[in-house]
Image 1 (cartoon, one colour):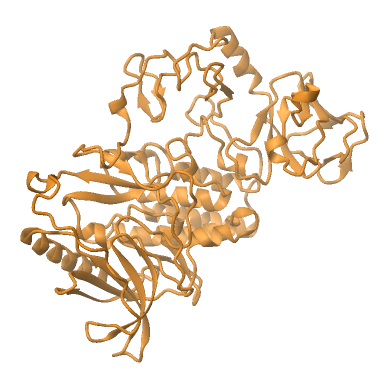
Image 2: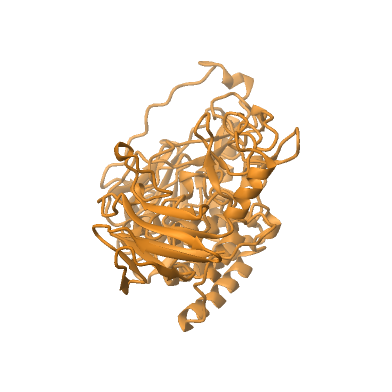
Length: 554
């Protein structure tokens, strides 16, 4: 969030106008710019905004993963944040001494590298190199993962620095000893082909993005994710406390693999290419949108960057909601659902851990990997012994974690907070943007809500703002527009257009079926007879057709 220069109110990074005073926000306040804009210190985002991540991430800076299948998937969104670096005058002009290099060729099967590594096949790769499965002929043909980086430098000084940086960083990697870091066995540089090579342990298995896609419901259970989180937090603590501290900066499901030999989480892709090419002309990858914290937009990085990314990764695994779908606002819980609103099966304790890890300000997060590891370990013990709570989501009134009601601008249709006086997208003053109406809306949204279960959509809750609320499906031809419109959650049309009604009686809420075709069932036990009201308690589950709603008061 940034501050409006006119009134000082909070303004989200993607909002063009202040929601409080309507003042236009300067374009140069945007957290990033296109990589090709010519700005020397700007940031850019690479990748297509709508595609989903795949098993093998083809990343800008040799972002490779490897596995046993030998298949490479491409064409997905990477969402990587990159830092633009100054281009020297001698090389900025097209054709000024620059020789276009041919597209690198894939190494053929059977080729021998450094006199001992026999290439078997390519198993991954990106724009600056590839990853190969190879056999170590000096050690009984043991399988190895050989990471290749193709040098892009053109002058002698840059060449010498690239080689020196590669050796320094390779030595650093070979000194790392942790069960969640693949062992580095060798590194070398080939003068003729101008390629760097790093020889690492071959990890059989799948990355976590693949595990997530293949899991039931598109999410992974809390016990498993907590165990994974403990292992990742531990390896982050190890990296952060080295004599030369290492900040990983690109933690996400695609960069975590499960070793099928021992079921341990392995941290892969240490970005050797971006270390080699660091602060030279061109761009240097520093993270992935959605998983990268706000301070990376300004080039600031300390170990708490990785804490945020671990929280974002666990959020994705537990809820199934991809942070890249709404990268700038995903963890602004004033405008987006909290984890338990997306997946009510989560415990209140894990929600607190997640929301702390992804706090906007670094000082409010866990301050080290060890601290987060210990908190997760304590939670795991409680989870195994059944000492966790599954009550209604907790809201901290007066803080930045209050869930705000969302409405649509009457002029441009953009989603805005219900108490915004001006649209944050088009700047138009809202017809109901007065103090009285805002107070009325605020009072109404503190009563009760319905949360759709079993969906990965971020906007899956309905505030019961009226005394009587029709639940069903919109049908413009019949002039039916229910307050609780379940159309987008009911692809099989099992919910009737006028399915049920929920209304308020004093401080209580009642529900009745309106003669629906597929019925209304409360708590999976009681099927309501038509027009027979039933008192609702906070936490009740209401099933309409095949759509389940959680009723919460507070």
